[in-house]
Amino acid sequence: MTIGASGSGSGVLFLIVIAFLLLWLIVIRPQRKRQSQQQEMVSELRVGDEVLTAGGIYGTISQVDEDQVTVEIAPQTEVRVARRAIAGVTHEDEPEEPEADAEESGQEGDPTGPIPDGESSNEENRG
Image (cartoon, rainbow, N blue to C red):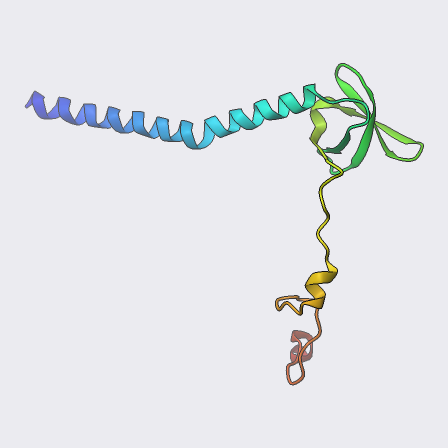
């Protein structure tokens, strides 16, 4: 009788170990990697870097202190921001996506585009 009981106990233990390993591979390891990348980026902040704050404000670093940075968000407008509130460093060489090309190509699925003849909008059907 005790042989069956000890066999099921080791099976449960094996499943718990496998579940913990999967949790570590899927959640904990990538989170630690992102956290170390963020810490490295924050430690390498320099005057003149173009940054994006956690609040969504773009600006250029004008002064770097131990725990905070001063970011120029407009000419003659500077704000003090905690170093850890810098979400990322932006790069000027990134090309912007042209929006006019999508309109000229006539791509479907544009909710703001004109309604083809013979069809009516939802607003017309309601009233």
